[in-house]
Image (tube, rainbow, N blue to C red; front, side, top):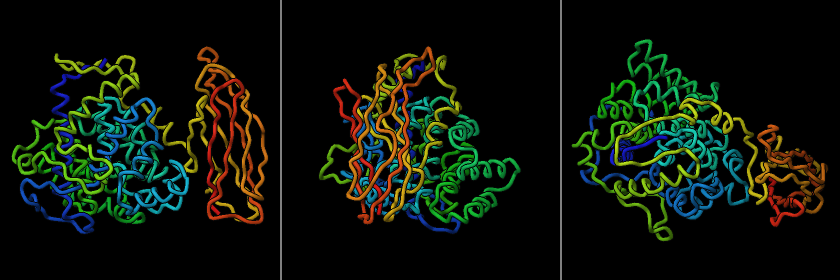
Length: 480
């Protein structure tokens, strides 16, 4: 059981949002500047925090969690909230939404035609998942993945989100920065670019290089990716943490002076230190300068009017959800009036690698669908585009929701001229911990286009398990 003193946890969560607001406001005026900066403090007026999409999307995710609940919240649920309430179309935001609108589902929608899959849009919005799963990084990264894959697919932007969500969640129970970085790295592929950049930062810091030299090495390492990309910018935030020697102001100014996506790096740094030290441990003069208000930039308030307006309101709504998320994920977290007590007996180690590998090792050309009696993962062998006469291989992986084995009949409803070959049924195993069966069933198919293809070719697959009340339907969209 992990028991958090209620007041201490509230202080940490409010510190997260206050630190986020401070960093976003201080860094925003320098966003996109490729050269190193030389700032000393705020460039905005007192009492007027600047709007920041880093925080905006998380407010929408909060409402999604409140509406849908943690038991079934899916990437498609988040996609529907995104389409409904988030306005901007820039970079990966626009690509993800455009792909959703033609029927591509996550993570496929974040992978297709996306030159911004390695960018910063997802790791900057992970605090909501960390705060809803304090001290349980494997829960936080599950939600962070569902979020990030919508506009980053299986790119570095998604790995960065998993890294940050794990680090931030662990920060509720661990205060050592190096250990937190190690926990974050344990959840992502060792050979990904985010891990490469973070390890470069650690080596440079351990070798005694000054922060400016280290910053330039990170820029050089990411030169092939360009600016506004996740590997370097995540590392700039961590650079501020390491070279800031635990001092909030020094850390913040150092990270912003690295340049690039400065509102994002500073906001994430601020949230991490806010979690570690709580609002009570942040500089009082900077907290007073910012105030409590949350100013939004990206949310359509005409259709969603119940967005939190202050850091305090946001904190209270998160606090209300923590026990619900804990119950849904069976993490044995309790809020108490007594002392905080951390006993991880029966829970995965903070640096356990299994959950991260399960998320990171899937195909970028895949998506999931709920069939009622089972869940289905559809995986293409390549980018799902067909010219006339071309073929595409598709794998269906079904996971049994109940303990009963079934033969599942499979029927494809195809566009004119398209053909499909493969099994007409899938045997869905029964669930059995005793025999080691996970209740899965697999089949492979080859879809061949006819003499003509449309821009978007919709295929309906009907899956019926005899005797079950649900008729499973999934939709594939093949580009022409």
